[in-house]
Amino acid sequence: MPVADPVTAEPEEAIALEALPPAGALTLLRRPGFRRVYLAVAGSELGDSFQYIALMWAALLAGGPLGVLAVRLADSVPALIFGFHGGLLADRAGRKRLMVAADLVRAAALVPIAIAGLAGDLPLWSLAVVAFVLSTCASYFEPAYGAVLPALAGRESVQAANALVRASADALWLGGSAIAAALLAFVPLSAFFAINAASFAVSALLLSGLRGFDRGVNVEGERPRIHEAFTILRPHPWLVSAVVALGVAVTISSGTWIVGVPELVRRGLHGGASKFSLLIVAYALGSIGAGILLARRPVRRKARLSLLAWCAYLPAYALLALAHSLGPALAGALAAGAGQGSALVLTQSAAQSEIPDTHLGRVSGLISLVHRGAHATGLLLVSPVFAVAAARSVFAGAALAIPLVGLLCFAYAAKAARP
Image (tube, rainbow, N blue to C red; front, top):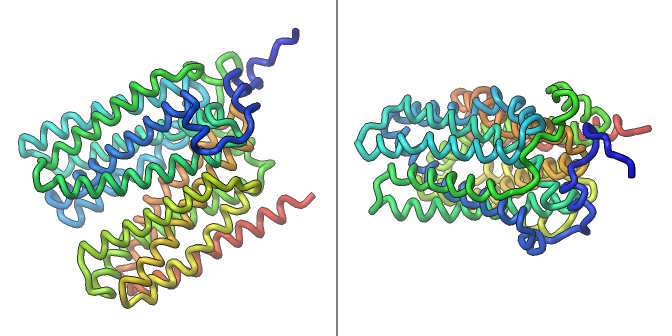
């Protein structure tokens, strides 16, 4: 019986699951390994929704609007710094160990913040530090999670798996935020940090029960290198274009959304926090709806459709630019959430379907870097435009720019893919 090459052979658990027929969302949840990961991610996402409200509100109390901006930057920058290294470790080290370690560090980082909050001492610098640590850990967790998913769900079912996780995470975030807002009248703010610490501890416990992911995929071969992620992507022009479009489009959309929506609500819709909250809810509902649809409808050419999904921003941001009442603004937010949610799920699923397991951690790390890092570049490069331009004008420009990014990348990939 021939012996498989230890460097290039797929792990046994991946081979076994990839041979399974495509599975729907309910079938995936019956698989113990996927169910563990799903519950771990869902639980920590629920905890994040509590912690996010506590973190942003505490930052506002400690430093005003500039305090919120400082914490948002501390939450976004680590993806640019550690994204590549997180993907590298996902291929070098055991993926399960990397996810468990990231969860445990996040839990440990939140405990002193919860204690300090109960003591009434939460300086702005401590909030920025914990935001930086949490985001750094996410830069290691996400590539390992992205690389593990095909082995748990099967490559033919990664779209359904990603869509199910995305829709569930958005729904839990929405529900958790509503519960947290209601609990603020009875529960101290710092208790939310403790809740999230507990959610990460539970996630680590669930993930520790995964089998077959304790070692790196290149244990006996040469140590993986970052540049190999770009080498392995070269024969995949559609996927390359999808990743590039993700980075540029999220830079424009996030920089516009983070500052522009509050400004539009205040000046254009003459509203306050309640209208702003409704737009956030509409955006989340759009992403949830896209996730539910993609969980039920498999797409063959995932990277191509991800590029076209950015065209949803034409009506989305046009509605926001022209809105003088809440209804059109809600429709625009709904379309924006559906467009970005679809593009992200399809790009991740395309990589997990096409890239071999030996390089998937680095490619997943690159996608995580591009997606999360784009929030930082959006804050730095796009948000300052609102200091010199009206919100409606910026939304109108973004309504044209974001679809154009997707279409230009589509045209480039179509040309590059020609024989």
